[in-house]
Length: 87
Image 1: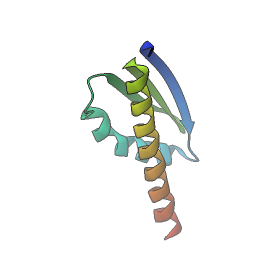
Image 2: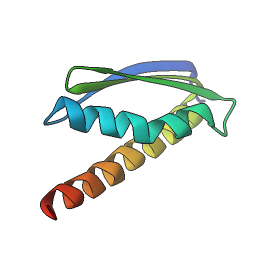
Image 3: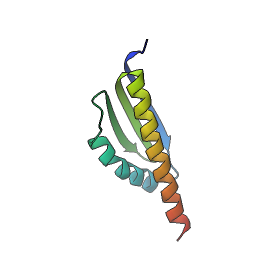
Image 4: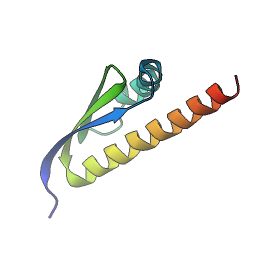
């Protein structure tokens, strides 16, 4: 039986404030156009950290949201590192 109304907050620390800001900007379109009505995500930057809050209707939608955002963050960070190493 899935839990109802799952909420959580995560903090992800980056090497620099600039890195955190770039990743936040990359995620903004995903936050605005979330395809699911079963979960809501809010992300803000505080210094070098992104603070992500997820509020989901159930564990299934919570898991889907966190997996999606973590994949986007990891992919974006990998691209950012590649860009930095090419300069």
